[in-house]
Length: 128
Image 1 (cartoon, rainbow, N blue to C red):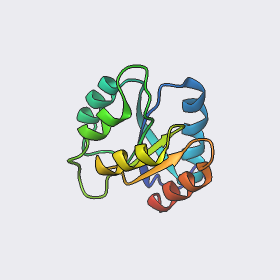
Image 2: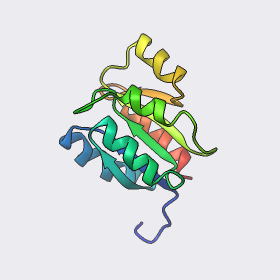
Image 3: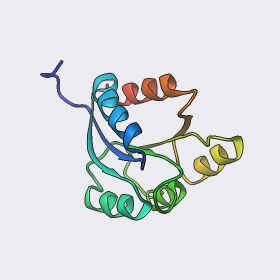
């Protein structure tokens, strides 16, 4: 409902406009989230994360960006506040890439093509 308070402030790092335009409303509806900012490149993401540093609760990162990589974004948020969560959402969620993302501090890694339900479930748990 429109009158409910937003419990989850999100930040989306994704360079695909189609995915951005479907992910944002889905996060709002399924996870009671509000997307504060979006970025399409690693540098945009790092700048915006600096600007919004204490204000986001969920960071959703794609691995392949218009410029730079999601791994660079993960490195930039290795030091973050308690209660800030980082999820990787990518078509390239191989076992090796999952391991690297988790080593860099991601809380979870989801495959865009097969794990969207699990992704939204995790997001909605954060938004409660």
